[in-house]
Image 1 (tube, rainbow, N blue to C red):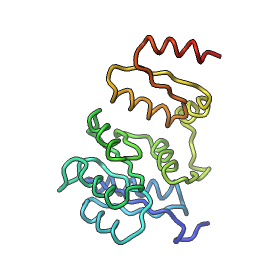
Image 2: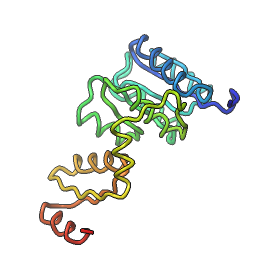
Image 3: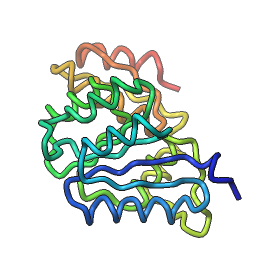
Length: 194
């Protein structure tokens, strides 16, 4: 079992106290002995905590009381540019996704998120292993394992959508090749065929 000094610290920030407390409790149970969690409803209190304590991961909704949009996340990334931040939102859209990626968010997910997917993302962010008795394989896990040697060629008129699709597929373990047109996709398909 790890000591308190070697445990990772996760802060969970949400306007809804029940949501932040529940998230903190789930993560503490899933990564028992590996993490300490602290829940906040105030982004200002969370920032003060960050300034005084070592934190390894921040989870947050994207629109906190007293701060517009991604302001809290911008401040976190300003203080600690390399710290992974995970946004969990119930009002996500493609514009907010791109804004989050531009700011440097590690993961952006819409509510509801399954407990297993949440824990998979947190484990990836912190390099932790989930407790075997709590680990449940999800379809995403199987896709990622079988996809490690697969190549995806993508084309889209909208460069932002193309970039987003590349990011998502790369995180799932695919090798992604962006193309400028459907014609280029066909040419690439001929080149990379087994």
